[in-house]
Amino acid sequence: MSSVQQAGFPSSPAFSYPSRATERSDWIVSARDPMARRLASAREPAGSIWEEEWQGGDIISSGLTIFLVNRECPWRCVMCDLWRDTLPQRVEAEDILAQMDVALATRGGREMEWLKLYNAGSFFDSGAIPPSAYGGIARRCAGAGRVVVECHPSLVDDRVSGFQRMLPEGVELEVAMGLETVHPEAHERLNKRTSPGDFARAAARLRGMGVGVRLFLLTRPPFIPRAEALGWLLRSVDFALDAGGDPVVVIPTRPGNGAMERLRLAGEWDEAPLEWLEQAVIRGRAKGGGRVLADTWGLESRALQEPSVGALLARLKRLNRGESGKGPGE
Ligand code: SF4
Image 1 (spheres, rainbow, N blue to C red):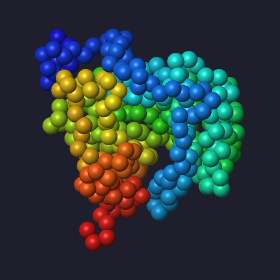
Image 2 (cartoon, rainbow, N blue to C red; image 1 turned 135 degrees about the vertical axis):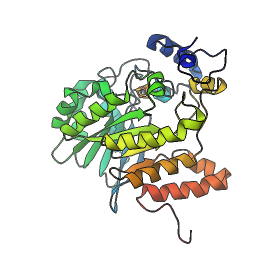
Image 3 (cartoon, rainbow, N blue to C red; image 1 turned 90 degrees about the vertical axis):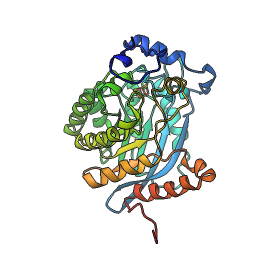
Image 4 (cartoon, rainbow, N blue to C red; image 1 turned 45 degrees about the horizontal axis):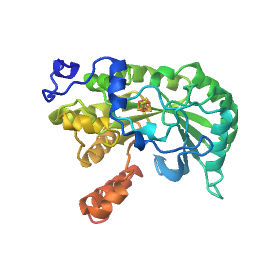
């Protein structure tokens, strides 16, 4: 009997999801389409985007997100598809700095009030971003009011404060972590090898260092029965806000990495209605505390095909700017 069946999840009879992390990682990797890994150069970022983000009150600030290319994250979470933009080998410090320079060259005369350095893993994983690159990275953050990096909670330690001290005066540090859900069994089965409590402790440690905390949640992770999933999403929003997440970013759980397709076939997962994004933001707004934002990536193209998605997207954009979700006349 699989661990999923033991916990009372409604698995199909033939479905078996390994209970041990090593076997789980093998199961997750075996579901991949090897052609899905996009060819990436160590000297070019996977992408970069200039965008705006609501900072609270009536402040909207603009900045740059750089998707850095490096070695694949070692955790291999079941819902993760970030490996597609990674390399099999480690990169050098000079590679990371070259990638930043390529992205920063697109600045023109634009304001850069914040800079997000997302590396498809953990910034403080020395196998991903060589610590010898920290100084050069920090110098390139000059002029940004805030730099955001992502990290697994187990790597939140003195490395964070060490990098924080290298940042130029006036540049604040924020660390983003993928909490995903506080459903205890589902969280454990994601293969992150953490508990929600680990995130709360890492968040408290970051706040103690004067570092901002950004937490990511999934609308409907696998292994949560459909009837309970929205309730667990709203509970997760509460938990993330209580842990000091500001912002808390809610992301639609998507297929596309092979493992999620297998879980869907087994009846362990399905996509959440997009309206749950809106419900999560409204829940966060009612609770108060940090900002709760909806990730609207990919919705623009769907909105062209589906008018209801277009209307929802318009509401989410207003909510993401701190406004009421209602438009004029609604
Ligand atoms: S820790 Fe983050 S980047 Fe690494 S596998 Fe899990 S979700 Fe992906």
